[in-house]
Image (cartoon, rainbow, N blue to C red; front, side):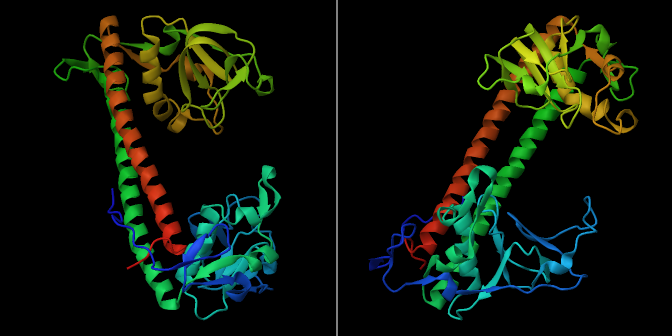
Length: 416
């Protein structure tokens, strides 16, 4: 965890701001409506040939207009000019939109808001922190208009102009911006380290499973050529069989529209998250996988219960010579990278029956299968626990960052 402020410094004297989201502010700070801080700009390009910019949660980016249907035919001459150092805000979407300082010259949607500093006693970096806080903490949300259920919740110009910001003296604004830049950079670095460690743990888990299901647990065992190029060598007492000899393969009979909210049974469609339904067509041990769509070769479910499934979902059941759970781990580890790789992958994401039937599977003796399953589950649980702790640390860092920013820019924490 990055260093935190062990003792919160506060200003000597506070006053009531009269603004609900601010509460008390330091006595020497001012309150200003944004119409006295910014000037809204509307500079229509009138010609083509500019870089087209877009606003995302990670900043203002140059848009690739050569990709996507109809992009090249759009008339960007009606877009607004944006220059380096201008503020640009997606004020049409207070739910997922954002605001940033542009690092580029270009044009941006005429629906966005472009503005710059009017008050020379204000620092851009300090104001940007406040503007981004308005999105991140949903401060602007209470002043929006539209239909939030449809994802349309905008920040009208009148509401923007009359919104109130706390304004410390300029020297203090600069000090606050520098302090927060230093602290948030350290927090983001710590988050990045945790995210990298999570990626390494997930990779370690994948390697562990792949090795266990294709080579077993004993590194000293004598190996033999499996006869399958991508499998390579396997323990000499193992077999290799085609998938079609290991289980029954069927597809479901339901469509997505058959789902029932709060239904009695799981309804497996082509995504990782199942729906609900009031019927079941199978009760027992099975593996399910998507037959087409983005989930092909990636979405696998192992279950032993009553359930129903989509007509484009394959069910593998009635396992022979192999434990169902071991086959599940084997498929999840190998199927997408091998069966759907290169020439075997069709132009659309679909899974043909012959491809499944002829997929080669390594078969250890029965007792060894149980040992492999147990080792995989024990090791996986330890890794998942470690991942969970890392994810908790990331959440704590994010909460600390948000709390720190809020406390400093509203004057609850004094920057020394």
